[in-house]
Length: 279
Ligand code: NAP
Image (cartoon, rainbow, N blue to C red):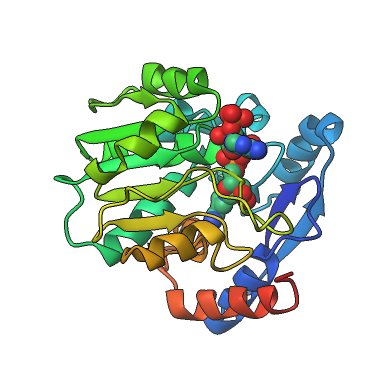
């Protein structure tokens, strides 16, 4: 019988995950289909019971359900629990088990670009859900120094306080960060600033950026934010948000099927989807 996979969220019409995963199922000759399911917050509990009852094989979880779903699952792995968010659920012998592949997806993507991370000084801009997943995953991976800067600096302080892994971190004001930017080897932009249609904004000035720094922005629409353009002009190597998106999807696909899929294939599907959407 055809296996069933899905992504649940509200809104969900924009999701690129169905195209990406359905292409992979076809490519690897797996008899399965991946649906986008519009689930409103007040329906979440019933939706999870329903998905379990019909024996769904696995699903992704997106905004606004990543936190609330935790209490509705049978089990949640320790990294996802400490992050406090689940984006991937696997049906393991009838039990719905939650994982977070956002942070590990980001980490896998950056490891493909840089040979060693552990000795690098990292700055994360932002302290929202994505920053939390990336920060905890990098700390769990043994990266020693990761500072955080955010408009609301108290949120950065909370992230540092909540992190269960050993890591040296400071929470900085944005203007303070601009002055000491030269200290960082890796700068990760995780706020929504610069996302289409508000493309003309950056979270902080890159005037003092180290010449050979590595700068990534997890936004993928536009593919090159103003922040990344500025970083490139300063001589930095850059990475856009496609990497994180594709790698989190690949890790979810691997958890469901045991296959680590072809990343170039996934990237091409996403770029094709974005083709009509980069405004
Ligand atoms: P979130 O939890 O709502 O966090 C938003 C962050 O942006 C916070 O740090 C917030 O600062 C900051 N921010 C928003 N508007 C701002 C403004 N006008 N000035 C200064 N700071 C501002 O969102 P999220 O889930 O972390 O997502 C953040 C971005 O990452 C979105 O663009 C999302 O599309 C992208 N994303 C990409 C991927 C991927 O796979 N590539 C995955 C997840 C998310 P405050 O704390 O001060 O409000």
